[in-house]
Length: 601
Image 1 (cartoon, rainbow, N blue to C red):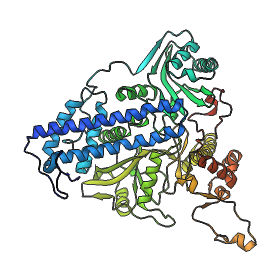
Image 2 (cartoon, rainbow, N blue to C red):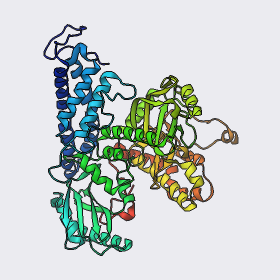
Image 3 (cartoon, rainbow, N blue to C red):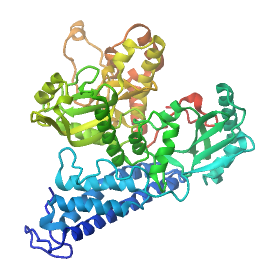
Image 4 (cartoon, rainbow, N blue to C red):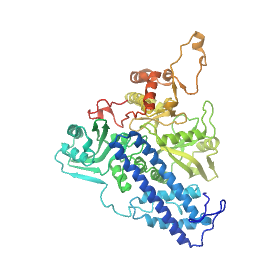
């Protein structure tokens, strides 16, 4: 628990604890609730300033600036909630630990935020403050918003989160109107050509699915989604009985902006909003409305995923915990080992019907692992702050989770207590997990290649190579390239999830394998040449591929250059020079063809 440092406005002697003036519980609750509400309002203002700056960065092609803003925005919440916790502890003084005051504060706070457009996010902020003050094990419904106080929004929006385009005069006119309303058109290099290509692509899709020839109505989010080097216009279109997503991807080349892709299916848009990608910068008044709109485009995504995708990751974590509790209540399922090879660093378990895994760091790592638990946490932090390139699974960090003991398979609980005893403990009725990461469950790649249809397996092994390439382009070397450390999403994308040996590409020394000077050298169990701790020999990757026959041939046909030190050093040089290499969240065939010279790395 944070130790109060004295009353606001006083200058206490160092090391002393101030005594709060005698105030009623209701007065203290009122002051404390207002302080936390003001703290969240201040944070929200700073968050939106950074978010709005993405438009300027995009217009100026300031890619380093938008990357710096993305990192800065991730840190704002933690700083704001920590400062609020410190301030409230100072305000309450020796009454900081009185739960009756906090219960009253929660009630007052709920009333204060009911007319705010961010009411659900403000509830999560209150929870963050209480958990910093009390280090609550499990949840305490008297002091936390375990469930939201508002089953429906307490206020109505002043206007919808989307613009409506009714009865457009053809698909080209619709696309032009949508692009015009972004306010970006003055920098387009050839808008007429872009509009024609996009309209033709929409028309092709309508014919393919048996819809009408034209779009009858469109609804488009009244804010542009920015991420990395791209901007996205997100909406939905209606054609007869068909309703489908519409996403226009805009890139900004040195000679102007252009429409690069049109996404028209749930799967295509799902990849854009993937849990393996960095968060969007999109500025809207009511995130609640935006998330519900996005849910109509992506009905298989949870609300938690969508909140996280738009940068509200703390509330997304709250929503994820609520989803987990709801599943436990409704299913009666028990936690058991996750599918796949048991790891040396993490214990991983899951619920059969809930596509999330829980990962707990083990107390000790056997050889050949050299990392420590602190190293692993640092690597997860690096993944959280960096560009995940669509290939690194985002993990939500939780502390002091508590579950009924009977929800654990006995064999799993035995392993957790033996291998993770510093983190996992049970008292005969409940299990407390002091620290864990929750992330989306995927099919381990080695299992997928064994069990999938041969054609799908071939696509996966090829995409495995693309995953390695795109991680390298983002400045990341996975460290351990074994298939068991990669997984396949429901959209067939290969992603990486084992971070204990992950490192930045600038730390790697890519070398050619020296030629053996004698048969004895060639047959030796140990290298006959000096090997540094950061030395990597790409020629050896093929030895660890773990597949033979057609799958091995498919990989080598597409990715032979990954087995050369030359390729790795070339990418290393580009990253070191500050180049942000293009990594597209869609397939090459989904591009419109106006971006020659910007092909996928």
